[in-house]
Amino acid sequence: MAMGARARRIKRIRDILPIFDELEEFTGEVYADNLFTSQEGWDASPLWLATPFTHNRDSELREECNWEVLSENLTAKFPETVKELRFGDWGHGWYERIYVRKDDAMALREVQEFVGALSGYGVLDESRVSAAESAALTEYLSHELGGYPGDGEDAYVARVQQHLFDVHSVCSTADVSQDMIIKAKQTVPHPYDRWDYGDGEECYYCTLSPSAKCHTVQQP
Image (cartoon, rainbow, N blue to C red; front, side):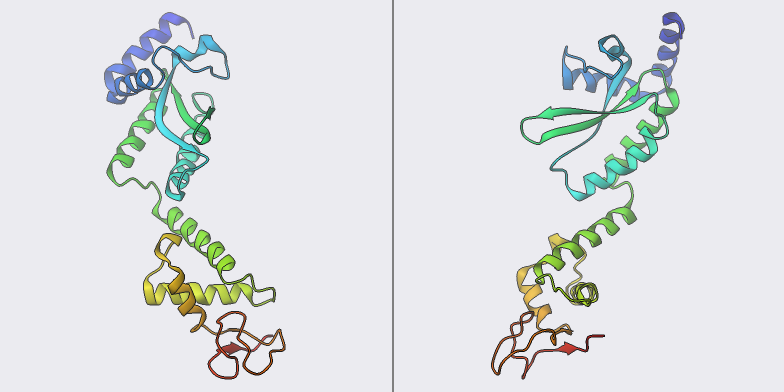
């Protein structure tokens, strides 16, 4: 596209999309006079606008889920005019930011819609976040429950997770405490017949005496 035609197109986009001026100001605030080095080189950088969409090595689960939605709906949809660029960072090791080219009105319109969505609720896909939180909780409980080496581990962890939800409404690792896990281990049926315990010995999983209070399930 000739520079004159591109400049006219950018002006039209600026006139109809409020997000344009906001992103241009934001780009200046983030990088001052030092524009980023794009994959196309320095002379391409004036054509790109920084968006507020970022994530880094230490991003929380919801931020990662939002990033996945943004990547799927922006980077994948507009591969030539939306880019994810990675930068080194002394605090987080690295961070990535999404950039959009000034002359793509459709991409900028979608960026504008996502900015509005995030400023409202802050979560772009609740079902994705719920699934990710459940998977993270399963992994955490699997570790906390001792990593049962038998075939029943997944079923046992699932029973504990369901118990924590039913009794304490636990949906994520942020909701659970060690006290909850200890009590769940003493309540939820769990495998026991893998080892030979002597009289008075404690169960490996719930720490209760197997001859008295230990809840067991038959191994297949």
